[in-house]
Amino acid sequence: MIIFALGVVACNKFQAPAPVTLYGSTQGEGSAGVHTVVGAETLWDVAQRYQLAMRDVAAANSLSEPFDLKPGQRLRLPPPREYRAREGDSLYTVSRLFVVDTSEIARLNRISPPYKLKAGQVIRLPTLTRETVPVQTAATAPLPTRTVPPQPNAPYINPAPVKREALPAPAVVPPTKITIAKAPEAPVKKTPITAQVPKRASSRFLSPVEGKILSNYGPKKDGLHNDGINIAAPAGTPVRAAENGVVVYAGNELKASGNLVIIRHQDRWMTAYAHMDNVQIKRGQTVKRGQTIGTVGSSGSVDRPQLHFEVRRGTEALNPKLYLES
View 1 (cartoon, rainbow, N blue to C red):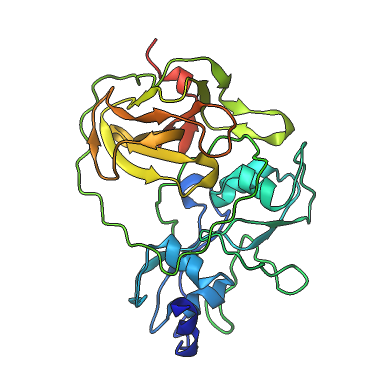
View 2: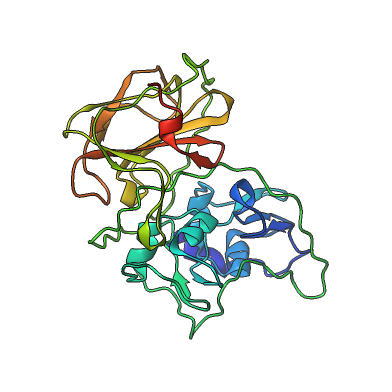
């Protein structure tokens, strides 16, 4: 309720159009929208300009009360409410463009196998705060596109993309149950990670668990894609850190991934561990190669105990089998 109250005192004057980078203008790190605050802009102003929910903009930037903005401040723009599919789009390409979960898109739009998209089809995208109220439809609101027009009678500026790190896409097993969490009243501001990334113990990664591969890396039938591998193991099996590093994420905000851990390693390497039963480390903690970080489970959108494991360099997902020690 406090966020919506900001609209009452919001300033509607723009001194100049704010520099932005556009959805889809580049691949990988430059694909997300970014807004630079100018003048006396408020959170309400930014949300109205891009037709986004204020609570989503606040959550994307870990803003807390009283949500004050400063000139020059960079704001990450969350995915829009809806997207109109273009020729050649698939469930996977849309998920990578907006860094959202393929299974959530399928669930939200009731898309069944073979998960085909048609040019012009309106796709609802999951919001960061999982709102319980219905979003506007194409009949009641204009659809956001890959580009953002500037304000009338003002020049348009398109600076270089702002670097960011995207969370890895979770396992691509479509869930069968819709779970909608209540939107938080105000997002919790996270403290910066100060721990230094330790040197690697080996040039190759340690396998986090041993077991049968349920799903390999790469494209799947029906246009889906697995950005890692899914390893079967008994529930409660210890999950080991694949290499020395610093924990940059430990939580369950990505519902399809369940209990998820992401570890940053030296030289822009990252590993991700999803569907765990419990997590035994915290964000910002330094871990050693082989250290137990949690146990195997079936949290998220899977129906049997397994571990979804990813290896990334920057934002690029790589085949884990090529980087694990033999």
